[in-house]
Length: 119
Image 1: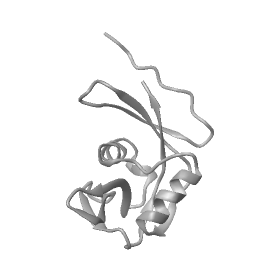
Image 2: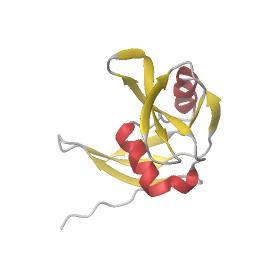
Image 3: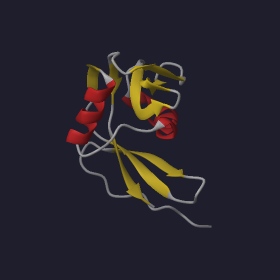
């Protein structure tokens, strides 16, 4: 059986797990320190980049809800994914009940950043 080795973490980072994509590629998902209060989607994306990370995608957000829910307030958090049929909206993850939904990018939601390391 193959094992995935957990990467070294920087101070304050939390290892959330690994995601293997249908094409066989994968990434370690590491939750960065810090939490952005109430910002629109563009501001949240810029904030995550300023930390050297990115907002999580929808699959990573579901993983974070499952593995690290205690690191989040029970509110909506932005993902990095725009809605496919409406570019004025982006997907978000609820950390109260685990649901995902889309909101207008101008709405103010919370944000957390992740970094990814290829497996």
